[in-house]
Amino acid sequence: MNDVLTERIRRKLDAMGDEQAYQVLDYIEFLESKYAQRAAGAPAFQKVAETLEDTMRAGRVPITIIKGTMDAVGKAGRFVEGMVAAGKAAVEEAKKKPEKPVEETKPTQ
Image (cartoon, rainbow, N blue to C red; front, side, top):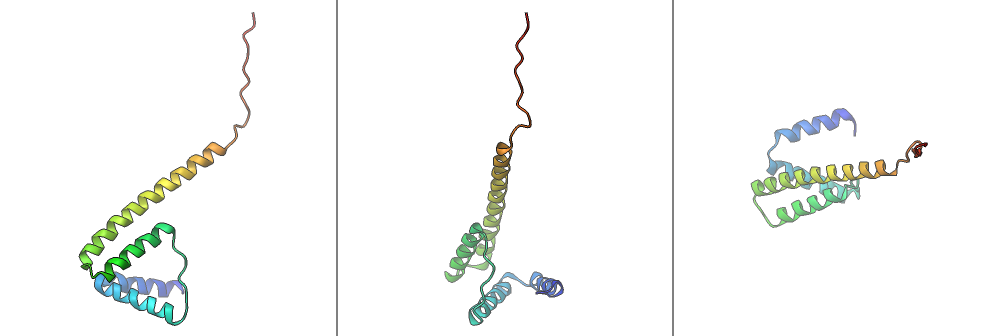
């Protein structure tokens, strides 16, 4: 999809309420199934969040509760991503070899 079309769709979605946005999502998922298209794989935490959201929608949970829950899940996801990035940075730092080992000098008498 080209950038102009992507931005146009994003503007339209931003102007919609949650209820209408979920209808758009349902239609997109219908088109995926009709044309056997697979969406790009989402990260593991994102898949969990989407499953939770779908389960809440199937259970007819009010949109306001779904929105609040997904906002909290999104914040948790960003926190986890930050922790993963910090962990990776720590591992990379620990892997670095010192440039030159420091030699011990013995005092002369």
